[in-house]
Each structure stands twice: as C-alpha cells, then as structure tokens.
Length: 614
Image (tube, rainbow, N blue to C red; front, side):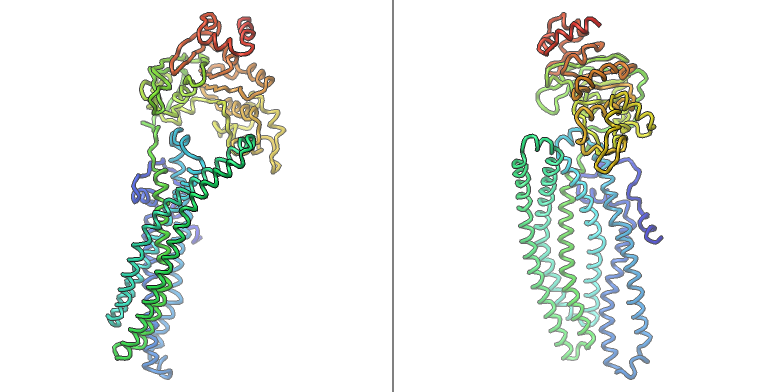
C-alpha cells in the first residue's frame, strides 16, 4: 500500500496533448521534470535532513568520548544514560525512517516514473513530426536518443536535487561543527574544499564535452546497427556482410575515440582526488593532536574531526563521480535536446476536424520543391469530382507520389492550396484528414504485431466478423488461415515480424488492402496497389476493384498502365505539371505522351483492344 502511494503520486503516462519542448537546456529539463516538482522538493528536504543527521552523529560520538573520559565507567550511566538512550533512538529509529522516506520518494516516486514519463511525452511529440524528419534520420538513432535523453534528464535532476544538496549540507555542517570545537580545525577542510573545487573546474567540463560526443557516437552506432538489422534481406541478397562489418566498425572506432579520452580523464581525476584527500586527513589528524597536546581541544573533538575527515575522504570519491555523471548526463541531455526539441515542420494550425460528405479533391496552383531550387510540383491545378476515379501516370520523377504526399499533408505546399470538399487541408487537423483517406502503397510495411492488429489498424474497434470479411475481400483469408508463427499462434493471432518480413510481398500487400477495406474511408489512394501480387491474385483483386472503389473518390498511381486504363480519367504528369488529361481511348487517339508510354509497355496494344471492347 505504501509503495503504491508513492508510485502513483505522479502519473507516468499523462493523457495530455504533446507540446514542443524548449530548445534551451534548463527550460528543456524543466519541461519534462515539472510534474515531479513536489516530489523533488520533498527529496531535497529529506536529503538535507539525512546529511545533517550523519554529520551530527559524528559530533555526538566525539561528545560520548569526552563524557566517558570525564566520568569513568562507574558514574557514566548515571550521568549520561538518558542522553545515550536519546542518541541511540535517533540513530536506530529516526535515521532509518528518514532513509525510508527518502528512498520511497526517490525510487518509488521518481526513478521509474520520471524516465517513463519523459519517454512517453517525448515519443508522442516525435510521432507528430513530419515525414521528412524521419526520412532524414535512422529510426534506431531516434529511439536511442529518446531512451538516453529520458535517463539523462532524470539523473541530472536526481543528482542535483539529492546528491548536491546532501553534500552541500554535509560539508556545511562539518565546517560549522569544526568551528564550534576550534576554528583552526577548519583550515585543512577549507584548503581541501578549494583543491576540490579546482579539480572539479578542470575535469568536469572536459568530461561533459567528451560525454556529449560519446552520446552522439553511441546513437550513430545504434542507428547503423539497427539499419542493417531492419534491412537484413537486402544485406543477405547482396552478400554485403563484409561491407556492413566495415560500416559498423567505422562507428565503433569513432565511439572508441570518445571512450579513450574519457577513461584517461577518469584516471587522472581519481589520482588527483586521492592526493588532496590524503593531505586533508593527515593535516586534520596532525592539527587535532597538536591542539589537544596544547589543551585547546578535547580528545573527543580530535576523534570527531579525524573520523569525519576519513568519512569525507570516502564521500569525496562518490561525490565527484556523481558530479562527473551529472555532467555526463547534461551532455547526454544536451545532445538529445538537439533532436527532441526540433519544431514540427508540418504543424496543425487549428484543431478543426474534417468531415467528407462528398469527397471532392482540388489542387489549386500548387508548387512544391522539397526545399530545392527545382520544383517537383510546379503550378499544378487539378479538380477531382466526388466519386471520380482518376489515374496518375507519367515517368518516374514526374511528381505523382509527391502529389499524393501533399494530399495527405505529409508536407505543406509552398504555394497554392489543396482542398477536400472545399476545405483547405492546411487548416484541418492532420489526424482527422488522414482518417478520411485510405492508402495502399507499393512499399507496404506492416507493424510487428498480429495479423488482426494490422488489418484493424485503421479501425481498432472493428469486430472479428468485419476483420474476416475485409480479409476475404482482399483475397487474403486463405493464406491467413494457414499462417502459424514460431510460438504456435495461428491465423489472425500470428505475428508478422518486423515490417512484415515473415510474409511475402504479395501477402503484405493483401493485408494492406484488407486494412484499407476495413477502414472504409471516402477517399482512396492506390500507389501501385497490386504491384507485388502474382497474376492470378491480381486478376482476382482487379475483378473486385469496382466493389472496393464504389462510392469513393479514387486517386491511383500506376506504372503498369493496364491497371488504370479503365479509370474515369487519366492525368499524365511530367516534370511536376499536368501535360495531358482524358480517358484511355482519348489519350491514345491524341498520340501524345501517354500514347508513347503505352506503346513501350509489352502487350500494350493488346490491352488497348481489350479495354476498347469492354
């Protein structure tokens, strides 16, 4: 019950809209830590209390030595028995209770929850980044940045709130108690603190810089390794294991180039610290004995000062390494912030939701360049009527896929507008926009989840019967029934492997078709939707295409012109512009770009005769 009380003090997975983190270090850290501010304050207070209690315990030991010397065994308990009992209760009860409270706050309240809260909020923000953000980076590197940054932020705050407060109170209390016994006892400690500060000033910034470089190198290495694993089929097909070895080795050597300097700094730091610690202990012991021999200091005070100096010697290693880890975490956080705090390139300008009663699509004088000098889409205007089926054709690089990306608002137009039922999609929330559009692409990747979850991805509330019906309509049910994964799960419960690697290309595409059928969106985009299917299955799908597209506005991209020849209208693109429009027969009769493309495709004229005969 007590554990759960602290574990639930701050919900680790808050249900709130993701917000962009600041791009400066301290505001970035505070952005993620703010929900835990009251636990942090409680942790600071308990850490300070424990530090003072520990130093005071050493001082009490010195007093007990003096009491023992003053009274002898016979009168000791009569004179000081009550005080000894109070000291014992403080050490045996109060100290453990404070420690329990501190550990509960730290371990149950913050350590697990804070890291997970940072990952949750960071992940939700990253998911809403633009397509170009993910296209420009390794997926593995981004995941590593998220995981590392969560730990970096948490450990930075924990060490600042707990360790530094603890040590500040500890050393401050030691100075006060040394002064209370004899101000001269503070001289070795003050000189030691000055030396300690010099060591920290010299080593810690260097450790921070090398840590930041190491964090970047680690992320790069992880990204390269994950990239090879994700594309393992390509690696195998091209016998590229040696090349991948060299690619990974380059990153490993780069990371070692940051590890070696870090280890050298660590060795020099440890030796320097031991040197000033030894000097401080010897000076405190020598000065204490000298003051005692002159009658200026009691034997208990000498015992207190010496044992506390020995304790400080042990804590100094711990403290400096914790501070060095703090700088390492700051470097890790700084490095992660550069990725996680990037502004979203395609952001919602409003939360307006899109309703599509008709499905009319319009591109009005659209221009887009991907930030280059040459336009990929250049002044394009196209109107698609509700329920119209339009095929986009043209040579590779003509801008067909880019036009679809602009319709899905994976990128924002640089000029012009894209409208659905008269609504400018730039003023519509992206999620509501994409719920109204179903897409089957040539490069079909599935999530490493069950067949059921993949089919129902666009409609998680779909019933079992609806999922099975969609699979049947996509000609996928027969192979789904026969599936079984390595753990014996079969049919809809079988796992598909990362990116669907356990399925053939045709099977993946049929799962994607089933997903689109189940989603039942009013606008349908087909980007070479049957390119991975064998002829028999493709023919079966084509036979059902009228059923799949009935009542929907369809935009289909195809390089095999026979797959779109029966569309209501064909739009021929070249260099980001529309150069021809019309039906299949009209474009053939015109003898232009489309007719030339058709003539080059094997069996084109035979297919033309078949289309004309229909």
